[in-house]
Length: 331
Image 1 (cartoon, helix red, strand yellow):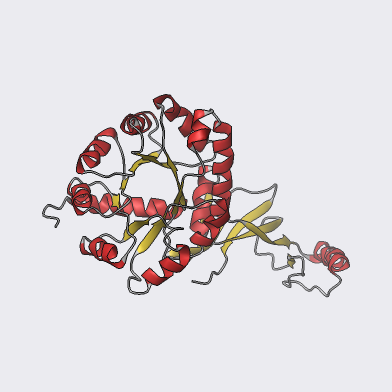
Image 2 (tube, one colour; image 1 turned 120 degrees about the vertical axis):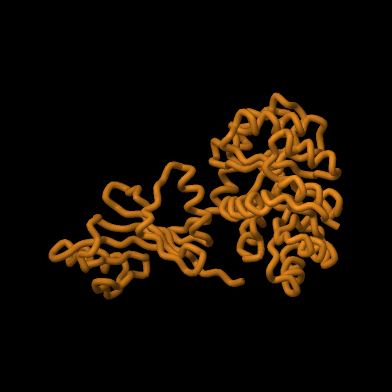
């Protein structure tokens, strides 16, 4: 049972939870050669990925974490497959910002809490979740997720524990990543598919970047929803006439055609038009858009409780505004 509590743990823990929820996906990597550390980070940052978990499944894990934390301050690096209290201490000394365990070893989890290091223990049963909750933790590593029953098992566990959230790992890939993220009890996912051992051994860092970009695009989940033309007078009339020819349906100001095109004659917007994208999670999409250099128009942000419902970017396509809106999901 935990006997010593480090007050730093709470703030560090909350910061990491927020970070993970925004990024949506964490690459899990086993590095066998320390010289691969920086090329790996380069490949991930080229895809605008700024979180990585380095597993203790190799003898050089600690040194890799030290290199990344020391030379790449913009990367949030953590230690995975942590099995002992000694590894907890060494991981923190090397610069790990968080640790992930495959199972729930009370002494290992308690040691992380004692030294203020955010820990995400492996949980696969109600008993594990009881231990998690007992320690004031609310996020676990659900491992191995696919072998344990995947989303159906997560839904079953969430019944008696609706206040807990999960990081599924073990069997996550591009084909199922989206379905896991669609479930609101999933904080984020972790996967080894982005940077495999073969990728590193054969210096296929371009492949790492490609797969990381695919994962990021899956997390962002952007879908073109509509285009609105801001126009008045004859310009608006001509535009609606042309749109009617394409759609074959009646179109009046403020109405949207079957093709998702609308003409706004209100004169309230100064731009030429607006392209609207829908996404599962506006905050996740904005997280990566910011990493790509975009800027959010903070005055345009509309919230629904603690979550963003819609927002405009300050970035424009010529004089066309860009808007993101949330696509409603079934829980």
